[in-house]
Image (cartoon, rainbow, N blue to C red):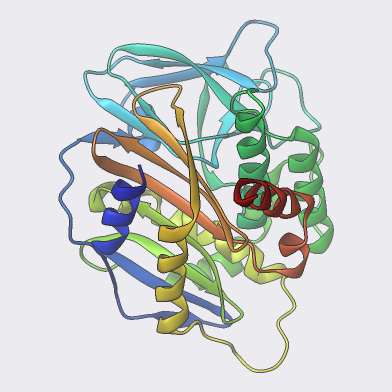
Length: 330
């Protein structure tokens, strides 16, 4: 899997940087060719080709039931939020759903204060879990996989991250819903979205906050990336709104963006069978945490986050990574 991710990264070109306040976005252009066609979550739901429900009448917080009724693959991305049923959820990992199939999907709750059915099935909320919470959730899923516990997250940590965001943005939600924060911040989010338009052929982004790399998002299909660009920009903007950047506006340099690509290629990898098509590749180093979905010899999706903030650099999970790395070297 190392060669597939490294080869794909080497086929990525960085577009001209876009700046707004203390956020920088480098559009990513992919010179490779994608052979696999798939639909995205939102389109599949809107066309009636996909149905997602509670796993049973009584429901289960960490699991949902999915039905792909189409003849095509459908791609669901780590961190995408589903709205409705008994409570809103986000996906714990990226899944490439086989045509004409059903699947139990691992999720996390993003609405702690509700457990009553408002609809028979879920719809796309149009939101992603915000970047800081995605870092923590991805790290906890990585740990669960290593412990043989599947794609489970630390649900309490997800709720805590959402509660802290409510507190820092001075928002209130009767059900502690993450989506309510996004709805309240619509004006701010729209300002950022206007500053970061897509360009022709774009298939991803590298985002910088306060002059430091924040993360990377990459899809094998430019057309499919365009469908989630807005949601991804909003998820990083949430971090920008709550960070206290000192001094003048800080822009991410081209050199720092390129260095992050090199760090991705050199990160350690662990590969697990996906719950759907392909293999789930987990990346970790002292600098980053990430996950990718590989089908055959093709990288379908990659999300990688920097762990360079003080709170994340010295987190227990990063300490555990350093211990594992040291043990392998002994």
